[in-house]
Image (cartoon, rainbow, N blue to C red):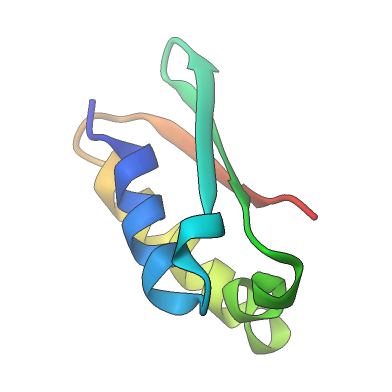
Length: 79
């Protein structure tokens, strides 16, 4: 299984102004995983992006990384 937590963490830390406040957790069973992202309140908009473009791009990268191992991974930004 690829390290989805590290992948998402790396991407999000490049987007935000306070990378030390980024927290990414993963939970799951079998081939289904949920990746949750927490950031500083002022960086939440940067992670989501205009009309959700940034978070959709993150989801697309994770989806591409999960194709080979046939995992199902969901990415969620937590307030």
